[in-house]
Image (cartoon, rainbow, N blue to C red):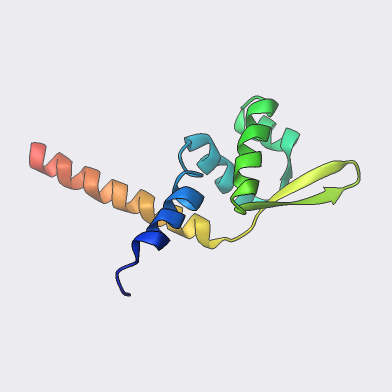
Length: 107
């Protein structure tokens, strides 16, 4: 893969990285990967206040990371692209590896 251009990195940062700027949004993505949910079910499952979840969902929706579908009077949220979870899993593995190396250096 070639080195990305600065413009592409600016887009990546503003579109994706800033959306991942709050751990609650990452948690929401993982929950929606398990199954699509209504905002109240999502809030209950995550133990977060519903207004907080709604605010984070709005940001994720603005970044096109989640989408909505009507279910009668309710709105169901779903993850747009499962690759996002794979990326997050890879980042978590990198973090584990870095922490393990740091632990070895300190011991």
